[in-house]
Length: 334
Ligand code: GA4
Image 1: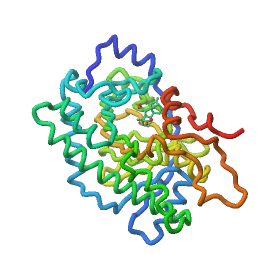
Image 2: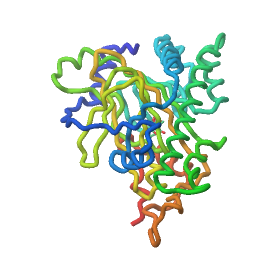
Image 3: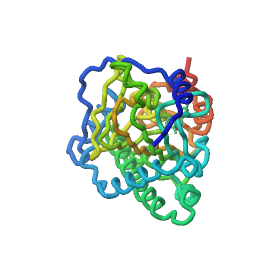
């Protein structure tokens, strides 16, 4: 649990402003991975929301619970031990500071590269005497997330009418041994008492942003807070569901579909008395991968909406940005 002195809390409250929200009830698309219409439903959800919930996913709940327990144990360690995971830029334990350019949130987190080797090293730094329990829980869960990501991307590709080898054009990017995928454990502690007095206002846990990768696979405990922005700018609260996963379209997939799919703007508010814990797999391509519309989806005469760039170039530019910036704007053709 994060404990803040009054001075630190005061400082934080000045930087991280409470926000008002006006919410409208909207039905979040829910997709049964075994449904006969799954391909078209996924494509529809990606076009309309850039976001959907997945049920009937086949990921054993015990595996998820095991990692959740290990994550809770990690976040209850003394601060010094959590910090032995290293600095979060690029990977490690972070507390309130997000990214490198002054963004803050009511959050602590562990950000990891999803590679086995990196995870082994990090677990060894945190638990030098017994790294295996956390390491196994992380590796087992991440390999399931990767599998689900592959399944979702292949189904999506079929829904986009890609045939033959083209059906694997998206999933191959994350199956690649050089795939630059990340994994993140987020802990949003209960809102501090100082905020309870500000009636009806919420504290930002993780400010609004889009994910730069291809897709993200998110799962949280029963505590709410996640909101997505609709195309008209209204914010919608996503009811928590600890038995399901949420898929978010990232900026790279928006480009690869030449804007047919939209990366979803989302944020997390810390407005509960209880801790929210979320685990997110960010499926990214290899660093040298060219991010451009898939030739197989382009109509005759259709031109790319974006300048060409590699994932490495996009990442470099993303790390120079503030969280809420539209990072794709720089790459839109004029
Ligand atoms: C958003 C998605 C992932 O959480 C993340 C974030 C990253 C970070 O926390 O270091 C970034 C953010 C994310 C986009 C813009 C930059 C980089 C913080 C930030 C201000 C790990 C990622 O890949 O991009």
